[in-house]
Image (cartoon, rainbow, N blue to C red):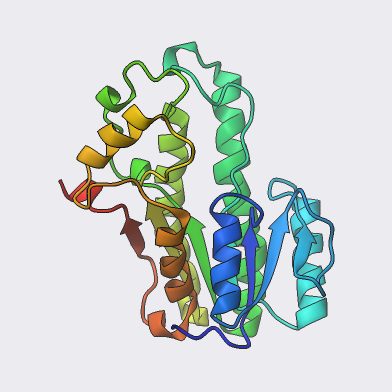
Length: 247
């Protein structure tokens, strides 16, 4: 197992489908791991931090609290998934206000957290920040996957957000590398989460490994990029998609 012993790691959206598994895997690798989420109280002794990733006041207070309690932040995972109105549905029916609100909350939230956390890491002279991308920040979704599946959508704004996250990751890696700080992205493929059987089967046929992903498939990539084993990796976008984008 890759060793994160004595590392202080914060995972935003740490109570969610992916985040909760990231937190568990980081703890299993030896890290002191903080689940930062809007749904938990701040109790750093128990590893929780109340955090709204879209609020500058909340993020600054949260980073300050972790540094006061633990002395530093070695790893930070931007994993929160904030959404505004008009997130789902066809692009043609989405209001411009809704489109921009979602860009601001999700991409803007990642930028906000990165700006504050990376300055802390620059001061320390070390650190690893991971942004959660998506295969749909790299390639367009196949509309045929979603035919007759109105309850399952991949909005155009999501692709815009995740494409922006991936390119922002590269730019931040270029800026902060001189300070000994690494910035990378992890881009999962589709994660099975109570999807209809027909959709799971359709999606599986589009992957080299013949199945949808699970949170446990993504977590090891997070642990790796946080660790010293990835000490010469920065500006990368690690695709964890079962080979979907290879086909």
